Length: 173
Image (cartoon, rainbow, N blue to C red):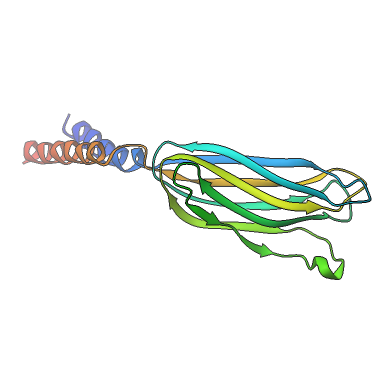
């Protein structure tokens, strides 16, 4: 019985740590960027999402194409914006293409881990597409962990776990 109560107390302590870190995984894409051959296909996409608690979020946006050459998608800006407060966080272009030199290829934009407040948020992706053979696009993946469990509740779980460990040690001696 004594080992069982120690295991239960340890399980509660571990649950307190993991309960405060709920995983967050969001995915957005636009796979229908196609130029008519005369003008570029401009896009200004906005994707809304909710965060139920403070969330440590990071992510990546990558362009893609079904064609062997390409993609011909130039993202010119990407950012996260709070709907209520208007706070904005920019994504950074980490793999760039020199469009002025008529190059093409995969672009990658990254969002380094940042704590975002609970509430409504939008991911904005702005750019232009040059491909005329097939629709091209991009995919955005945002991942992180949130603090869905209020701090006092997490502390209460730790307190219960420590009390359980204390009782199991007392009974053992």
